[in-house]
Amino acid sequence: MTITSYLTLLRHPPKYALASVLIAFGGCLFGLDTGCIGPITTMPQFVTSIGHLSSTLHGLVVSSILLPAATASFFAGHLADRLGRVQGIAIGSVIFGIGAALEAASVRLAMLFVGRVITGVGEGLFLSTLVVYICEIAPPAYRGPLASIPQLLVTIGICTGFFVCYGTVNISSSVSWRLPFALQAGLALGFAAACVLLLPESPRWLTSVGRRDEAVKTWDVLGVSGAEREKEQEQAVVVPDAESRSRRRDLFKVFRHKVWKRTALGVFLMGMQQLSGIDGVLYYAPLLFQQAGLSSSQASFLASGISALLIFLATIPAFLLSDRWGRRTSTIAGGLSLSACMILIGSLYASHSVYGSYGAGRWVVIVMIYLFAIFFSITWAVGIKVYASEIQPPETRAAATSLAYSSNWIVNWIVAFTTPIFLANSTFGVYFLFGSATLLTAIVCSLFMPETRGQTLESINEAFERSGSVRSSVVKIADRLRSVVQPQRRHGIVSDATLADVELDVLPARVG
Image (cartoon, rainbow, N blue to C red; front, side, top):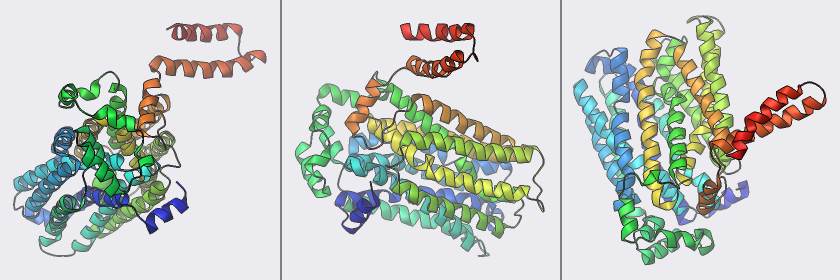
């Protein structure tokens, strides 16, 4: 898409674009919780109301939303397949609002835990379905940018959450930490009402349950032309009979022969997205900046807010260029950039080059945290979630995307729970962990991740059906090695015996 295309879309937005923007507001709810919970748990007023939290309890409070979200996310696809995308999202939003209201009213730590568990269930139910809905209503040419809107609104929510807490920290009463939770509750209930009243159901879902006439009318309402509805063949394939209805109810349909590779890839990518450490940075930004030398609450909150603002600003070009820079390229380049930032921070702490009150080391750490957040927003934040959804065929898209989000939630919980414990015991270990994980992801993606930029959903299916095995990837690497070795042999740099060893290693793979 060109800038002119974006301007045209903004001047005369079709209904599918407006529906995508509205449904993407669910990302803002997720961002609000992510941006609020870290600052809230370090507020003096929170400590007065709830009590001091050890590093273990701190991790439990922050991460308690995530395991319920992971569990709920696993079933979100089946709820969306049964009731529809819009109804599934609305139900999740209502549950999220109830949990946030309970958090705002908490008088004991146990009550706060219960509220966060309920919030997590709601979050898990609606969040994974947002991108599914957008992918199903958007034409191929606009799918990447529109499916990136939820991430853009996540960053707006994170930024808003940090600055709301920065604004309320000076309130002397418990309202300082209750108000951000109450804001989340009100917005969640309003979002649920807007979904039910204003949004049409996904025409692809309507087709999949046999309501084809209603689906055609919905395409017309959304303003998607016949040429943009991709191949009619897809609609014919997903019309259900008794057998296909049974398969859709099967929890293991995402592991069938033709889709298990893309399911595994989506689960891996979504899990490693969190093992990059991004939510460790977002949840515990005040703690990280305090460790680097910004000791006061206001200073660390302000630094955290700036990081969230940078994330938001970096997401804008990523959103605009999401279909001009391929998913594969952004994932590999992002993994290398994120790894470099984390390993540099870990090396500074490991070499005792960071001092709390003086020296350049602490400022390098702060800058690297900011760069890490920017690199993540430009690359992994946008592309991976879209990729995990768009690589699936229609009949498994909701279920497989939910499973991928479950992986995301589970790893997110591990990161959120263990980060304060890591930091309490080692200033550098967690950074090396995150750096190694992102480097590993870049390597895996360079071997097994096909490009999907600008392709129709059907051509993506065909690409995965044509994709090679692990052995074929090894053969490609061996061929590249041989292309390097051959010129060196001609110039006498590599011996014939060495070349023979390479050829013997390649030969069995070719024969297989």
